[in-house]
Length: 241
Image 1 (cartoon, rainbow, N blue to C red):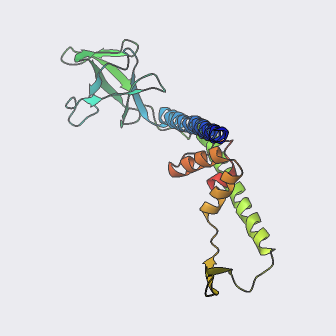
Image 2 (image 1 turned 180 degrees about the horizontal axis):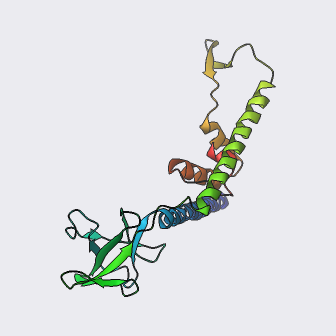
Image 3 (image 1 turned 120 degrees about the vertical axis):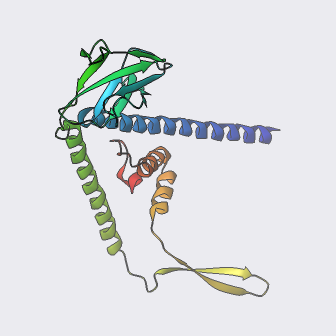
């Protein structure tokens, strides 16, 4: 009975450890994803024509109509709620420096944004008048991020170069394969040579990191690699290789 209790306690401890690791990994991945989405939002604000509606909650249905379509006023463009901005947004392709008239449709009702310029058209209808900003130079955030990416690339190349130099300094074997003698039949005293090519790839790095207890950094590193997300400052270089 004591042995059974010990096994049950060990199993519970292992389950709790795995659960804690999954929770911490989820927190780090969510942080990396939120940072990625925030940077993308800032880039849109700097370089795109973004129309916003801030008056209603996320449960509302908001659309946009205006002279930016072809033909003008012929299509309703649904607006999506952006949790980062905290409002409904629409990304449009307007002519830089030109004025456009538009109107919002909120829960089926046509309405103007009172915080923006309101004008009257030839039919006497009130519309919002918006001027599209001309193209701008890359934002300071983009410039900083480009420098950080260049620095990260240099660190990764340096790590690869150091690893290659370390391997080159090791003694050279006659054969590049691993020689293992295995008894396949003890009664007949037979043996066979099993040759396995030594392959150094990403799996080796991941297995080493996991054995050293860096499972969270490995998970975040692979997430950043798969989704082309920039590696956070706390993500190690080895996790991204």
